[in-house]
Length: 528
Image: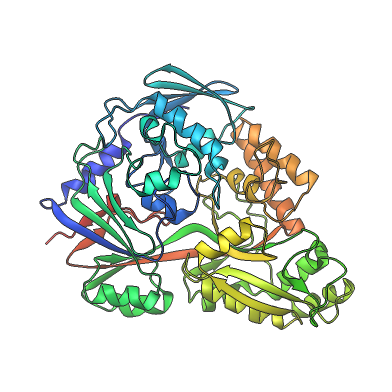
């Protein structure tokens, strides 16, 4: 596989051709921001979205998740276990130092060593060895055939080897957050960050991809939906992300505003804990159950049949959702068109609970994010009500992502409802992360926090990981999806449609991305 230079440059030139003289500040109202300025700290979407402005990735993911040149201008498979990447010449970091293969190697090693609430090492898990051929050529030796390594490298953020030299995992966050290590090659330079408030970036006038139209970019965190809309309408921000569904029609009627909508690859899904015992499950009287009921496939099926995905998409998500029956959306390589969206059946759900020895149900906590993706609070609340109809006593526990993800990593949860996006465009990324047995030695199952394991599913995932034939790999991934659904490892619920709103006289969104990233590089000043 070899990709040529120029797609990004051509796209940028097309956008910039319609842009008036260089504008000043772009202020964006976001629902959530980064959790650190270290791009390797966590794999959450809002983290990557913010830091793509400062740090380039080795391979770029286009607006529809197509692979494009980034800091690598081309790549090819040298043999079954070796990929060679040719690096972009004449690129400098914000401190003026040159970008070389040493920085790529150092970034990979950092990701392999660091651990955060959602570890980024999943993107380099296949790397076994690194060979620097020359300053602009690097070879990556993998632990077996790795046909999707370039897909994984869309999240390989390149940090400066010089700036990160000597940093320990314990002092990395401080070094990046203070700005000492926050030197990238991206289109914007780091200025300051106030957690839970705002991130300020200034234009990098020597950016290899061309000078951006915005002298300064401010990403203001406004988690409250009503407040975010209000700040847009009063002109305090130029654009807002994740417009609440209830406000879309109203904002579309406002002549001063423009609304853009796009389908995304994010799928709300319910994860079960398979560990014994599980911390948030009990009988309805509070006593301990003989075993974790989610280990019984009949109970998982009962939960599945109690959920009405159409209502979740149309009512809880207020029309900004599409019912889904699998973890990946139709645009993803490995999507299985034969898998249906489940139909609710409350009578059968109650029968299954009775067959499992739980005719009166049981009590558990339903954990979900309430500030990460559009509709997450509404979906979680509606699910609790739906499950009550079959006799389950559910405590709805919506919390900020910054609270619930660390709690999940600590093993404190019995369920989790959140969004998952197949950001690499390839289904193996998803199934190997959440469906495979958590196996540090194989570097698989990094997001399988709940003790699930199935030998047949593991085999399918491992076979797909090394299959170089695209048709055969697609077939294996479709079989993987079918097995994942048969076991109800997680319950896919609905995919997310995202909406952006902006001041018509100030800005325009040139590209709406399937991964929902909102980047200053895709926003241009309004033409007058």
